[in-house]
Length: 60
Image 1 (cartoon, rainbow, N blue to C red):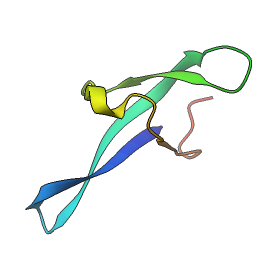
Image 2 (cartoon, rainbow, N blue to C red; image 1 turned 90 degrees about the vertical axis):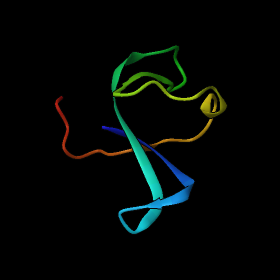
Image 3 (cartoon, helix red, strand yellow; image 1 turned 45 degrees about the vertical axis):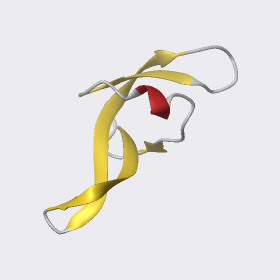
Image 4 (cartoon, rainbow, N blue to C red; image 1 turned 180 degrees about the vertical axis):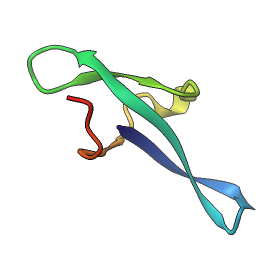
């Protein structure tokens, strides 16, 4: 699983930190880059941003 974690201005459920979840769909090139599909499309400002890769649970 992949998590794009970001901070929002408004607090929801006691936290300003929010997450958009996704999963790796396929590799992209030879340098370890991957393509990912997220539940909700990522906003354009996130292009090139870092995401967190969760090694567990894995479907491989």
